[in-house]
View 1: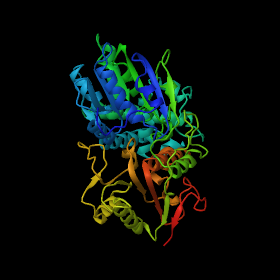
View 2: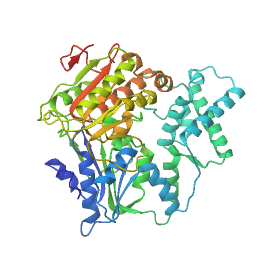
View 3: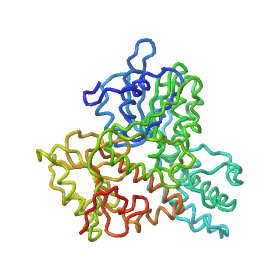
Length: 478
């Protein structure tokens, strides 16, 4: 087993050696060591005499998949794969199904064509008729991810639509429009030669499994960062497991940022004689960072309708999160680079032996940031990463690609209230749902930090973070 992985402690050992048959669920706070447990359990289930066998360790996040491959021993019984890559490979290799997949950019263009076509043939005055393509894309993802085929039940509101906050639900006419656009999108997609899109690949995998006389491919499946998977993805993974095998689900619903917010109970996991284990101990963050993250998780809408684990205080103290007020948006990037360059060096020895990440959404700002970094090793986090560099350095990339990872220091610029949530997010999801997603995104960001956390703004601080006068920050003003 990889030397860089710490040995499981206390309750962690219990999960690593849980029963090797049936479905098991492990819910834990950020920093509780879920990924350590997932890797250790994969090794245990792949090698144990009597019940060991082909074992799959699967994630949603591309960067995390690359990291996991770097720490998992090269063993013939262990496969580490990102879900969509896995699904496509299994369809071809195991079931002989070759699909032409529509990429996300093309998908959005086809949805726009479908929307224009439906509008040209009807009179729609409801709110949904003025929604952008991203709204329809998200609604389609929800329908596909929940394997909704009864459109009448969806249109009439007989199926609960979670993931759009507590505000007004889509009216019947709105849902009818969504279904009309969805059907037209499918027609256009097929006419362009595409068999499926990426969100729909879980449907295809389940269909292929249902038609196969011998669908069991793995003895054991371990799902890391399971909160990011749709219910249909989970069901498809459960369907490729031997009846004598196991499915282990590791998740933290406080980190879910994709909007479905389905609890483990709704994922088709049959716990039965299995066990649900909850981890409340944080082994990663210092006490000030953990207190800071707890504040975010206690905002009014954060935990509604999901399984959250109440964290205990970590034993390790450390510096307070730093709140920097910059002079402008450009200065925010400059400050982020300055802190990254400094924090990449050890406080005492000044050796460049720290791992720092700058989480940034804007591509232009990202390019500006890179030009200001003076570290010899800079690494961009992205879903297409093919190799993981464990050496010290400065990482940068979007918040979503940091899920499941940890760094000595985390720097988050653009924490301004005026830009969070983004206008495009509000247009797509509605104000309340956009705020929920934004709070979760910030939670993911701050909980990646082991020791140092730096937040930067140049105007009014976002409402999703503690007030400037809360006493939770070390403040630096211009």
